[in-house]
Image (cartoon, rainbow, N blue to C red):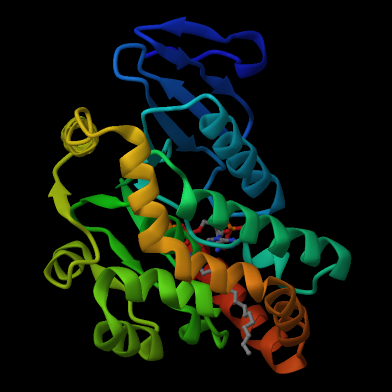
Length: 280
Ligand SMILES: CCCCCCCCCC/C=C/CC(=O)SCCNC(=O)CCNC(=O)[C@H](O)C(C)(C)COP(=O)(O)OP(=O)(O)OC[C@H]1O[C@@H](n2cnc3c(N)ncnc32)[C@H](O)[C@@H]1OP(=O)(O)O
């Protein structure tokens, strides 16, 4: 595995363009043999998704697409937490201009991840609430550590998961399970997530997780990439088009709804409860 600076390195090997990238909040390592890229989230303490990390994920996805990566493993450097979801500080007492940029960047990141031409696996090596769950659901396959939790818990915070969050889950576990999970804001333990098909495999540790993720990606070794990518595009087309068509309205809703006093109160109380917990 090579960990290098993308801007400095672009080489051809085994007929695949190899590259990797080192940055602050994400790092990328490309396996020279397989062409598979591992994208690590590394924003301590909990990989909460603020504007800066989302911008890095988004630009990395663009680079991976350009460089014709053969597959993606999305995971966390911080074992125990895949991602705590959106950084609540981006929504609590926000600067509205930044808030808009934040949401637009989240939309861009989701579009790129959801529609990427290469196969993608989330190696969920820790808790994955809300936005963390969204990232995992956007991949094609999910491998998860034992004793973790995953789900879209928005209603518990007094906020509403946007349509495209909901569609991302519905496309994996179906309408009935999604309705039940989202109205409760339910977080699923690993084994529960497996039983409803939200994740595909359970692993004991990172080594096994990487092996299982690689095994999934290997399934495509002999499938012509173009045929694979077009098929994925057709299957995901409606979900992506709906989001793209409504993205202006979605942004407006986020700002209007997110800045309502009642929503701000919920977010403030939730932040306090998180802080109290970490001080207890
Ligand atoms: C008409 C309808 C239109 C719709 C309009 C749009 C509506 C808006 C939709 C917005 C969608 C939002 C989706 C989201 O992602 S919201 C975020 C949800 N995330 C969570 O609920 C996770 C909260 N965190 C946890 O549960 C735990 O932290 C953890 C991830 C399980 C980790 O636990 P652990 O014990 O290891 O760590 P701590 O809890 O002690 O946390 C360490 C410090 O990190 C801070 N923290 C945690 N999570 C977040 C976060 N998401 N954002 C910001 N900060 C976070 C925590 O407070 C601790 O801080 P401290 O050290 O300063 O005390």
